[in-house]
Image 1 (cartoon, each protein chain N blue to C red):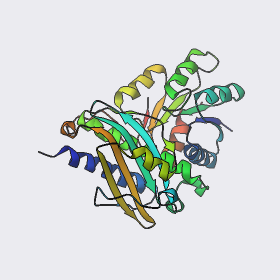
Image 2 (image 1 turned 90 degrees about the vertical axis):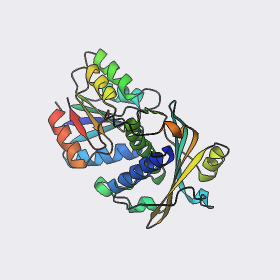
Image 3 (image 1 turned 30 degrees about the horizontal axis):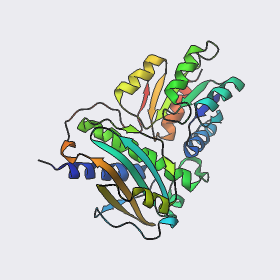
Image 4 (image 1 turned 90 degrees about the horizontal axis):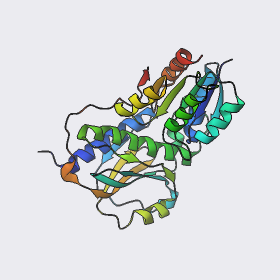
Length: 120
Length: 172
């Protein structure tokens, strides 16, 4: 069973994403910000990271940079999930190594399809 | 020429209507600049800051306490109404921000906070100008306020399309 890490400071988002993906057969690990996300990443073998952009302590793009700089994690696909939609920010995430960008709120069927397509 | 106040009102109202629609809640805009409800501590409320050369201040969102029970989401798991309000505030400002890109305005946004209605009202007071938007729902009124420094003369559509849409999934 593939494991997905969701990193978001909103409990509402963590619960709705987890419920949706667990219903599609994934196992989901939750983290509340970038620092917690890196800790959970070290403890779990995940097939996909779903990452918010604006979070306290460590934001999503900063966490993405740290993931890409760590050979042990750099092959894990990352998809951003955020309210941010400016093309310049999306392009920045792509250059940093993200595999996708989803703008909240995302329909459950689209979230599942993206997870199935991108997870390793 | 369309007044900047009308442009901002159109952006806020369309953003709120489309956002609540996602959660299967119908909201209808009512007359702007209404007074706030007197029972603020019974309201679910949240605030988030924003800044740009044209608009800088806070958006506040007040929801009737029973509204969260109407919302539909995957799995129908019980969510914390306060956190849901905080996330709604975040998503509402996100929509407003994305629409303001069409006015060549790029807001920097803060992190939303869940606070009591009274505290939020005290925080709002004294900030001028303030624009109050009301929305009718089956469980009472939703109130959105935008307060701070607003240069209405510079809020006008330029037709630029520099952002994706809410709900979009972009695979690289």
